Image (cartoon, rainbow, N blue to C red; front, side, top):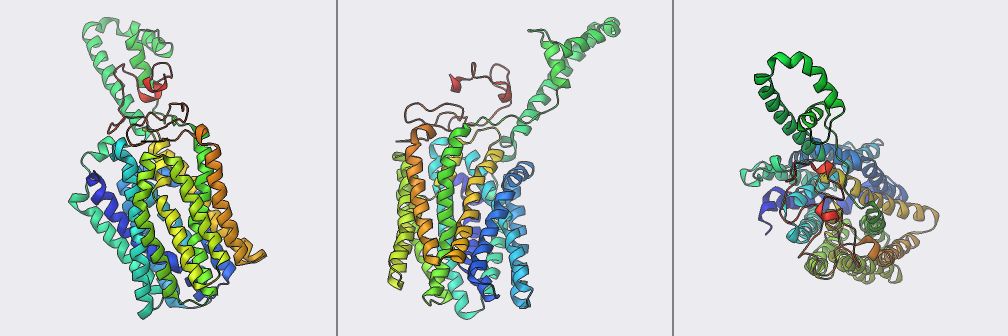
Length: 503
């Protein structure tokens, strides 16, 4: 079932996630070791979120131009260069080190966005609709395996080597991901020909029209050479004002018309409503490692102990990830999102109410249960709402909600620490996550995400919800967008009257 994406997506994602998982528990600790205050250390992570937010749409456009798999390679190479700069900042060990460290992390944020969007686009394109939720869960699971393996390796390294050794490991993991992507087994047959954005599909349609028109013109020249001068002006006029049923005029019009990017066929009201809850989820997810690091330092834990705590949470997430996949397919996306946000938020509240080492372990465990249930839910909902034509562009827009949460989470923690205290920041994050669960429950019918037994059938993205409602990609399971349907129309020319999915 997952074989098509095992080598080109899942294994490179696991390696990349292992490197990322190793450095996430030490981003704040690294800033502290270079002389930053607690508020500024948390703010650095928030600034990374701001950069991600600004780079989200350009990242989607870049992926459209480079192609999904090529974008993954470019992002990984760039990440290795950035990680090398971070190691230099630690080895330099001067007043300017914190500046280099901060700038390098700002560059790492959009690189990570390109990687995440590209691999998500590959999975959404390659996997049939019936297996999409499982594939996205597996993709989220590869991240969680990395979040488990990475901190464990990082903790072992920090027991023997300085903190910069963790960033060296992340660079090596990225290099291994590139090597895997270069293997012949990681190639997806005909993927370059079957995937692409709307501009590519539209350009292909115009190319077909040009070839047809050229053939008609050649036939006309063979029989009407003597009348060509007289008819040329008429043909030009016909191209400017085509008569219905005049296929020659339509062909000439197609030649004159420049390729244009098709409009995204998406229910934007549903995207915005569910996107608000995705923001609350991402706020909690991005705040979690910051909170654990700062809370661990406040109760006197060693850096390696903090890293192991994060690894413990990642391991527990893996256990509940499979239950989350079952809930997504059998109870629906909304049920998964509500359970995830409610339990996740309760973990933050538990940390505040039990300010001890045991309480911290319990709180991390509760957070892990909630976050594990929501493994891949953001990517699955994004794929549910995405159109078949222009998917990478849409996913770039969809990632705005995710990156907005990345910005808000650490920024809120930093702001509340500066104004009040760490405890208030943690409590606010937990309550905010629970508010997100309430929000998606209130608007569930309006959003219209796939409900019970969602993995069995997925309607088109343009269809409006009925009752509990469902939405999905424009094509049925395993199908690919084509330049023209049986009536000879391109996807951008379909109307609600003649498109079967909109009846």
